[in-house]
Length: 153
Image (cartoon, rainbow, N blue to C red):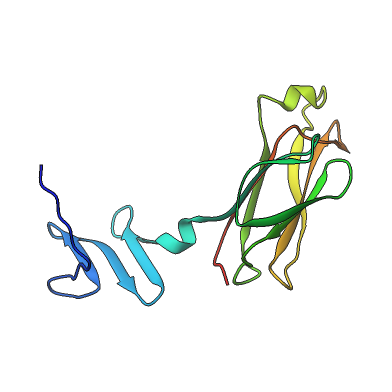
């Protein structure tokens, strides 16, 4: 096995592109790096990373795991406000929420157990209000999770 130790990789024909065989794999420019995806498609590495994540126990008001979360505020039954450490760069960010499928049964008896986002602070790009429901009413989920992708400020 060989080990390569270096500080800078420079493409042979283009200083901003790394090629393996005859396939350009990684391209870089100021504040942007793309990687070759399916076919000839390029995927932005920065846009594809999760910028904020939270796993929060609404029934015990405790954060189980988080990234880029400054604070979490309990806003009543089934509702929490997640404030980001670093704001999102624009109002066009994507939020995904969920509750653990293993814990849904403890919340209610029908298929109306859900997690959702009721609002995002789009003016400051600094927070989201997440909530969970059971039997069509707001309820404290044992674990409410959210993930956010987009550009940071």
